[in-house]
Image 1 (spheres, rainbow over the protein chains, first blue to last red):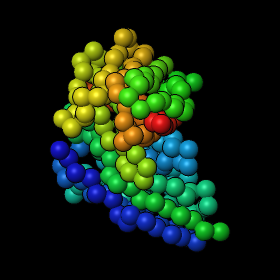
Image 2 (image 1 turned 30 degrees about the horizontal axis):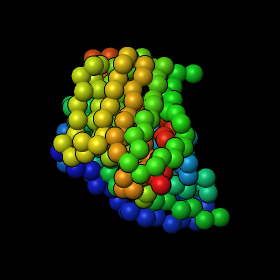
Image 3 (image 1 turned 180 degrees about the horizontal axis):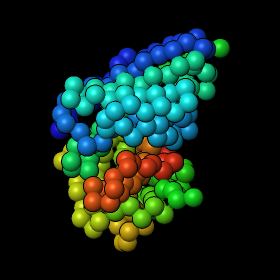
Length: 108
Length: 115
């Protein structure tokens, strides 16, 4: 099956700093999503981005499907951005697979 | 608001006692999924329904079963829970490729404790 790798596994930032999270995947994908998992376990959809670039406030994402990677940018980070960020991909088989996640800690 | 609802939010069950987790959706999505997430791990796909067609992952234990009586509801049955089955169980839906695919929507999850 498709493999998903995320880096870095852990990231510690000071409030106000910018960061880039990376997701590499091993095959062509029909879907790619970035999620933020809050402390209560809820997976919050950040972006549905199988290709191209999207922005939502301080967050933006870019997927280069031909090179099989996606980037999530967080600008001016806030303590509320802390949590685990997952990249998940779906081929044509309705079987979305998650990467291992990046655990982000933003310190005040 | 259209959403994916999981009940209960927390479930405690006894070792070996069958337990059922439920998921409902108001999105009219034709695909429903169950994921298992253990502590500090990524969610792992157990199985999914595409309409009425059941699709089991190869490494999902036989102890886990699922039912989808209609479009809106899907159930996860654990026939004989073991201590290793304690986890967060996440339900998700998607519209599928034939309905204008817009990605997956997740419920809030059910945290299962086995005692």
